[in-house]
Length: 253
Image 1 (cartoon, rainbow, N blue to C red):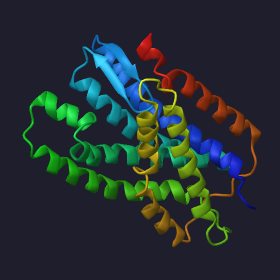
Image 2: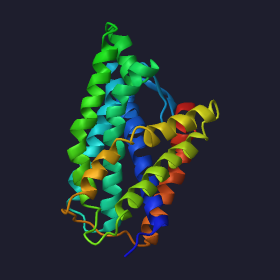
Image 3: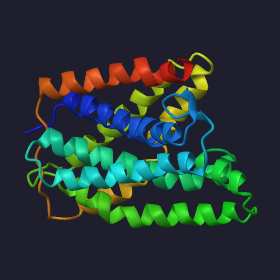
């Protein structure tokens, strides 16, 4: 049975929104409030906190990591093909986003890790250490992503089906955050670009895991058919995400 592209795209878009929500709102946002700070900026990939400390900066990446691991744990218990696909993409997006933070900060000179280094007064060698750590983490996460993709790879997949399945999700996830970023009135183009990079570029290494699964006979998944319940629920998640987090609604409150 062939996958339904609309369902794949909607599920992956929802997964990207959940990853961004976990990182920015649950991680940074909740910790900022716990530390007694005030949220001044909360968009798809940008966050600002007046009064927050190192814990606020650390919480975003750590919750992102926890989200990826939790998605893999939940995936094992699901029978629905769409549900397993959601967890696989959420895990890949979240784990890659976590690893990418270590690579992005020393190159761009900003981001969570750069802000932490600046707050702690770390010597410039942190850039090299962070870059190496990011590369290592991408390698460490490969077996985890292989597990997730193995559960969405069907035994009777024709050549290229698994790659198409993940490619649709990768593109849909990147576009979902890019379009959501356009709602940030202060800098819509930059927000859209950052949203696209957070999934579109950061998650590219997941294709190494996909290649490993494509060569393996251990496939536990199935094709994803048209499912209007998933399409409607994921579309609702994306719409709410755009209205609240994409527009910096809480930061402007």
